[in-house]
Amino acid sequence: MPKIFVITNRTLTNGRPLVSVIREAAATGADAVILREKDLAVAELYELGAEMSAICTGTETKLIINSSVETAIACNASGIHLGTGSLPLKVVRAMVPEKIVGVSVHSTAEALQAQADGADYVLAGHVFPTRSKPGLAGRGLDFISSVKASVKIPVIAIGGINPENAAGVIQAGANGIAVMSLVMEATDITGTIKALRRSMLSVQ
Image (cartoon, rainbow, N blue to C red; front, side, top):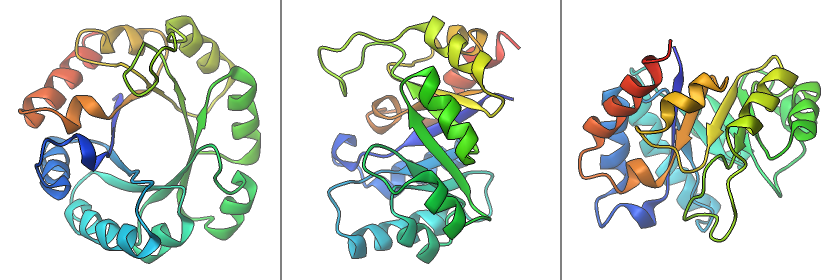
């Protein structure tokens, strides 16, 4: 089954507590939550991560911490996601061999390198235009197809994905999708995630 990753951004929840958003996303069947709050100090990130860990415990939702290995360890998260400026993948893999480690990639070459270095998945994008990348055109569905053809590990697509285009992303070869604002801003989180799932499964 295609996976749905929800990436956090507490500035987009329209005043709703982030823990409330994630609780509903986990209850609805989000496969993973990537806690990505870059402006928080480590201690603050740990406190939020501990809350997220409690929410995800007992559900099918895996908690993945963006970049901070120490927070992932302290919160007993399922994994770590690495992006620009993170520790090298090989270093992280040696530190936490038992955890999931994913990597953001923007080219086939980067995806191949991530696989060679031991990544469990790649987050590939951005596929469609998105407000988080203003002025930058999306790389398109052919980019996802190219990355998928080059690696054996799961490819999670990101960037401007919604229920209207999610089916095409899966058809292009993605093993799953990642969304941020779509869920963070949603007034109906359950309905949004279910609509994404229906779209993705329509091409299976």
